[in-house]
Image 1 (cartoon, rainbow over the protein chains, first blue to last red):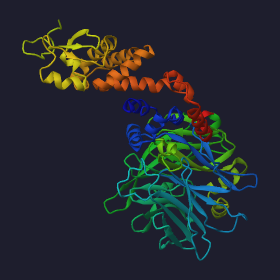
Image 2: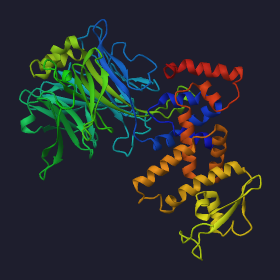
Image 3: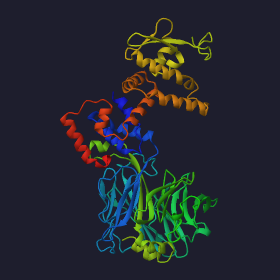
Image 4: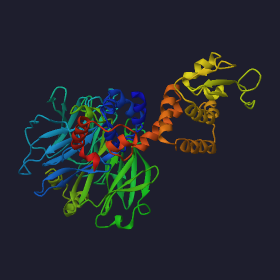
Length: 406
Length: 174
């Protein structure tokens, strides 16, 4: 009666991945049932809201190399320590983009690896040859089915793209790696009015375009890169907020572009609406007063709360404070402490919409219909917080941009 | 006799059907309740089960059938309202309370119920008992799950296989 067992196991909640895994070990028959692709699909359809498995954060190791570590929020653990002098750059659609930090910490090399934290498969990208070291850079990993109707619920084995953007003086270069061709495509160029500093804040995917935070001497703006064409453009922020050095890009409830920023203990949530002439119009959609929501010690003046991440699909905003990390749901104002003071000062948290477990390592692995959201958290230890706050204050942005890439 | 309230039938009284368990016990029940079973629904629509005929259910014993019908009778009014979109919160809470108590039963009864719900294709009941078993294995090791569900002890070969997998997925056992 496989169908009966199927009916039972498909009801294991997705936020308890160990339960399904243990069930799969009960006997061969159960293992076979859970290993069936049809089971995985039914499981995903039944539990469409994926759970958050944890975060990846970049913390300095003993030799001060920024190294990615996994901070679990459920009982899932990746099969390997992420680190080994690899920094997490981005995470999306079940994949994590890692950058191997050069031994001397300052020379410029693009050793990028795409890693699936659940199946543990990884793929090293060919080194991107650039004529010079970029001023600052950022990159994004995403499912190649974007724009093609992929719902990213079960696409972890599908082809992926890595979008790389870098600033060289007054030029921005964008280049795309495709896992299908196994190589980087032709770079696209965009001239910007002045030297920009591409921030390490996570990019956000809205429709068919990636968005990165870029800091110009006079204002903070958003770099938009069209996936299909590689066309780049710059979006201005609302005038009263364009001097804000630290903003967090996010998707709005109706899948538009938005951003969050904190000013005087208030979280401001802005969403972009299209004006008649195609210009961006920003709408202040919410203001969340933190004083009434966070504990007093989280509202420290020395290290004031900062927005570090956004859980796409769940809608929670992540705040870093001196006493740990909190999530706030803008709809309900529900606050939850997710990480006690973990000994690092977080700067960003990327969202990884993981699809299902799958993979090819073993029949069991192939089986597990676990889905997850893994946040990616790029942080520094508190000892370096003075540096990061100086970055936030706009002073030394360039220094921060370079140092933070170490 | 059933109360003449459903209007299901020519004379105003609810139509009744007879179900016969594997041990030859006859159960007379409203057609609307028995129709929660997809398996029985077609037969009943064709006019079967009425009068002295009865529908034989050779795979379901009387104890289990009695339990199944208890569920069907309770859920039939809501099902008749198309999943009860107009049900009040009180009605829904009452059904939920009933469901929780309903599956709070001896394991042997629960397993008979799973099989009966599956054979008779009673969707709500299938879901209810499956969820109950899924809850029962929460936090248990593969061995504990085997014991809970009354599996025989694993053969040495099976045991070795389990151990190997458990080593590989150590995180699930912390």
